[in-house]
Amino acid sequence: MKQHKQKQQLLCFLLPWLLLLIPFCEARFVVEKNSLSVTSPDSIKGTHDSAIGNFGIPQYGGSMAGTVVYPKENQKSCKEFRDFSISFKSQPGALPTFLLVDRGDCFFALKVWNAQKAGASAVLVADNVDEPLITMDTPEEDVSSAKYIENITIPSALVTKGFGEKLKKAISGGDMVNLNLDWREAVPHPDDRVEYELWTNSNDECGVKCDMLMEFVKDFKGAAQILEKGGYTQFRPHYITWYCPHAFTLSRQCKSQCINKGRYCAPDPEQDFSSGYDGKDVVVENLRQLCVYKVANETGKPWVWWDYVIDFQIRCPMKEKKYNKECADSVIKSLGIDSRKLDKCMGNPDADIDNPVLKEEQDAQVGKGSRGDVTILPTLVVNNRQYRGKLEKSAVLKALCSGFEETTEPAICLSTEMESNECLDNNGGCWQDKSANITACKDTFRGRVCECPRVDGVQFRGDGYSHCEPSGPGRCTINNGGCWHEERDGHAFSACVDKDSVKCECPPGFKGDGIKKCEDINECKEKKACQCPECNCKNTWGSYECSCSGDLLYIRDHDTCISKTGSQVRSAWAAVWLIMLSLGLAAGGAYLVYKYRLRQYMDSEIRAIMAQYMPLDSQPEVPNHLSDERA
Image 1 (spheres, rainbow, N blue to C red):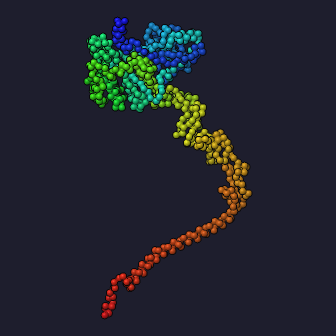
Image 2: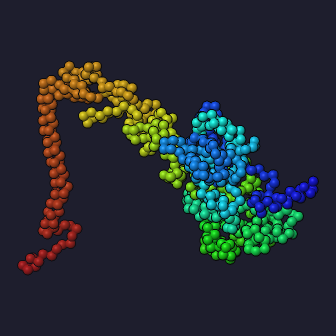
Image 3: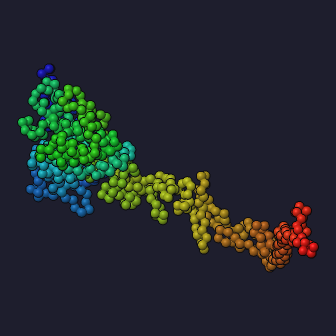
């Protein structure tokens, strides 16, 4: 038993070098699935699971309909179909072709590549053994596989042996087999923010996968930073590390591939222990990139990670022998990252202690909840669901956009090349008011929703499919609130009222339901107007007119007629009295001016004159010069 356990540990230690698997021999790997629905024939109609291939471009957030074809020759699709003069390109107006092929004899990716070149729009691989579904992955990189893996653009899925036999039987019996591949629920979409993580590696000498990963990071940087800065997403990078079994920590392999005394390891980049970089160099750089994210995240700028990773790849490649701390420090300085915080985060790679950052990464590799263990590099996880397919900008962006709750997607998800534009076809089956150019159809990334709209601050209420009506204050400004309205001879009437209990009510002078019809009331005929004996009544649209015979004048407020002559006399006397009152007021004003201003002025003048001849008692006697001369 003890020897078996040691062999198991050794196997777990060696597998990363060969297959890039994490060292958990009892790993819980989750197969990501999409829905497959057979629509005809009725004998096999129904919904089935299929495992999404880890290459090509699955249509996350969307669906595809097609006709299944099972070839009579080259049924395993290991050879090019042009060698058999076979084409699966669909005719104009016909459904796309979904090619059904058998598992075995060659790589999954090669089967799909040959089918794609023959015109197939998607590939279903029927398993050849009775077993649970597995994930179809790409083969170990070599020159031959690298030529086609990167260029596969169609989706593929693995189906069980039993279901594959049913499809073959229906096709051989002459039935047309139609089905839908549906990825709309492949990614959970609970709210208005998508959380995603990328399990990656700083090693740039691991072949085609490394090249494709670095190309993806470059292409996706702009979209990632826009989404992150806008608060639409929460991104976090992760790095896979392995550990060295305790029995081998003193071996040459562990010392060159691990840090912290065998706790955190990575495969040798060149698969050559005697030359080039060692695995521990990769672990240290992985740790540095993790700390770049942590330090940048503390400053509220987690998107700086994308800048560092791309700049490091360009400026510090392994091929140019620049994959080292000195080059990394120059990149860190150029991006304004706090190097002291970075060094503190990284700790001492030679210490015989756990590194909290890398320990957290090893714990995160183990699957939790609906997410399985991370065993494939690279791996993208969206809303705790592993992405399957090629890491390509538009494909990954579709996967992220499918993770938003409908109607909360950012603008980048609703661009022309991303959204489905289902509202353009028959208004998506939703309610609409063509006269007011209002619709309940709203495009989303996964399709469309029928929701009553909000127009100019007025909210419409209803089911969104057959009925929507404006509600609340201001609703009458939107197409009269759906109530009756009409205009004649420059006069307009509407039955819309802004009341909670009453929405449509015919205005005064009309009667009806207020929605479809309001009829004019004949006030004259119904004796509701012009009731005085001398009155004449004439009905008008929405109102009435009253007049009086002879020289009489109609007074509407009192519904009575009065004499025009008497009215004129009273008006003349009123004018006379008004003139007399005005003259009286003017005389009174003149009197006041005389009394208080003019009289005061005259009194002061008289006093001045008298003062020259008759001095007041309070003044001293003024000498009389005339008397002196006479003396």
